[in-house]
Length: 205
Image 1 (cartoon, rainbow, N blue to C red):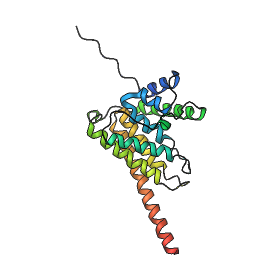
Image 2: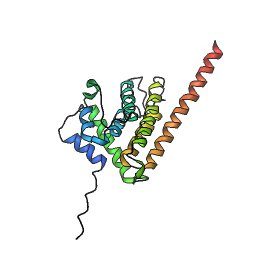
Image 3: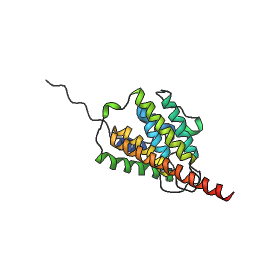
């Protein structure tokens, strides 16, 4: 007699929606504790989701990008559990605006899940690839942080981090590749426009 087949793992969107509706700890720390081993990836999606929107933020998202950089350094260092300063861990996600944002993430993830499938799954979840993941997030978050305010140049690097993180959550190398392209394009755009602005200012002096 064959052993019963194991139930498929819950979809990331269903897990996130369950956390949102179960009345648990409605803070960033509570979200990360709920997701356990997937905590790093879901943290990057939540933290860089707002800077990834095509809206000038005027530097209002810098604290989110700093938090993402701190977590990326922890991932590079090989930490298995997330540590956040108490103030950041207590960040409320239950307010109407933030809850609407998280629900928007649920919808976006669910759409990706419909077209996604495991690609190169064996490469995920290893110590080396986790460190590479952390380095990619650190670079994208730093690029978003360094983008001049009100230019919208933080959008593509942040979007790259979000897509790479979603690719890790869904174990889909194609989504990771899309994130790398978006992030590289954003960094290149920052460098090109920054160099042009520098030369323009030099010509005026």
